[in-house]
Length: 202
Image 1 (cartoon, one colour):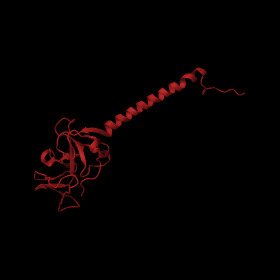
Image 2 (cartoon, rainbow, N blue to C red):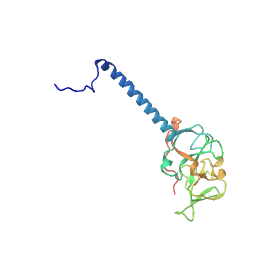
Image 3 (tube, rainbow, N blue to C red):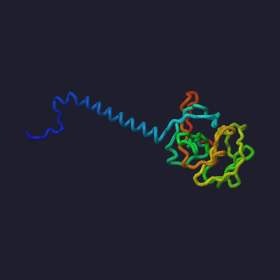
Image 4 (cartoon, rainbow, N blue to C red):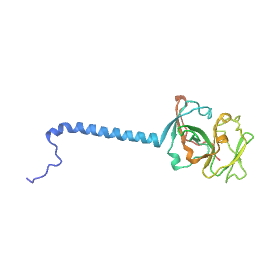
């Protein structure tokens, strides 16, 4: 009989303990990998956000729980109608605003007589923004102004136009200040909704 090296064999005593050791070893690996995945998703992809204030009523109410998608804007640019979270300018970076994008980089936005008008390449003569999907016809946008956005600026407004601190007062927001977009309303249960969908468009 040829000699061979039993390098893949287990001693009888090892057979009793190996399955148990293997089980706990694999379980530990799964737990560690799962924890890393949760942390990565929590801090780099999705973040929770609790609505504070009334600036987005009636579409978003005080203490509603939102999930914010931070990945999409690493791959694509914000679009008109997107509901975005942005850093509170000039204050603690832990404070955020929830607003809606109404004008994009390079566009001219004119607010007059309670209405919003957008000037861009497809509409050189201007076009009134159709916000009927998320605003009541009775809602007026106060604060007459005429602003042309720079290449990295967005104009954002709150849905509660009479009671919103937005670009009418703080000015256009830089692209770098936009953290992510509202992806999911998770609470209350009666208002759970997937939010990453089209709203206002040209």
